[in-house]
Amino acid sequence: MAWSTIRKRTSKTGVKYQASVREVIDQKNKTVWSGTYKTKGEAQAAAAEYLDGVNKGTIKHVVDKHTFRQFALNVWLPACRVKVERPSTLKKYEMYLNNHWLDILGHLKMTQIEPVQLNRWLELKKAEGLSDGYLARMQMTLSGLFELAVETNAMGSNPMKKKATARVKIPKTNRDAYSVDEVRAILAFIKENDSIRRDYFFFYLALTTGMRRGELAGIRLDDISYSADGTTAIISINKSVESVKNGGRSVDFVGSSSKKNHNRLVPLDVASTVELKRHLERCHSGEVYGRAWNSNNEDRDIWSNDGWLFHRGNGRAVVPDSYTSAFKRYCKQAGIRYMGLHATRHTVATGLHRANVPIAASATLLGQTPETFLRTYVHINEEDLKAGQVAWADEIKE
Image 1 (spheres, one colour):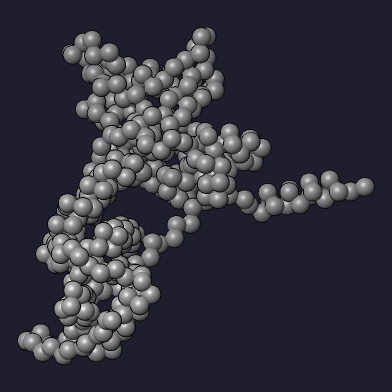
Image 2: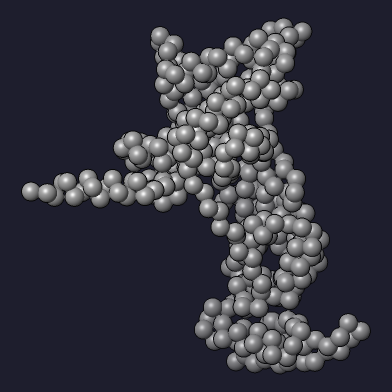
């Protein structure tokens, strides 16, 4: 049988209330849970919630006494290294841990972490100027850590799920598809401006194939193969350059595509293959990167590339974030609404759908499941709805 007690604690910082739950274990009265709260009502509610969980069997007895630091480094992170597929996700978790969690939560026992500590952590992180989206993703990851702690009896319940814990919601992003006129206008603007023409083929591929920015940045020359007559080409998507946010800073690294449906072959038609060859010619002539470019590294006196289709001025893989910033700038200069670089995928998906390309084929081209393709990427406008209604009406006419 378990029971709760509420004690009033007075200190220099003010009055607080300590709630605890005790139970007879091995013929001894032992505290199985405790927490500190600002008001008596909060303490009573938390204790009642814990007792209810004990009675329903949803809360287990804690048999481990890890600190947050010990559990995160010795249990959670090793488990993530086994289960997490994407290298960028693991890198992101490590950044959360080292830069945002350990300094505030690291010294606490897992059993001491309650809504009051998590809310204080949130206040401090908001004061650092972190975005709601970043904070919300950290909270979701932190909740996953606590779930593992509950499963391994390192804590009795997940404090992130308690009503008293303040949660940040991920802001909704209203992405749409660029119109045909907008696509033509932005590509023409980039192509006709000498100072930014070097970026033309990157955005051409984004707006005609729907490749993710990291996938585009990860294309190497040996990922490209040509048809026997050289008029068409195929690009093998098998890696991605990831930008992982560390607060306001980005850390970039190259990783293999881990999701099976992300690895794919993207065909280029005759016109796109012509654009590809033009891009390579401009690279070799020095028009793109300012100096002559030798992809085979045969002459070190000539500007050499480390095998990337798109690269920085030093020959290394490009920074995906730089293309997002550039696209925003170019849209503004061209007088075109900016909806994010990822909207190029929505644009291609919507175009494929309107062209009546089979859903399975369209999803494969974009590296998505058919369900995600329809749910996330296809945008239906009023003209589509009218056309569909007219077509159906014509179909059922006698």
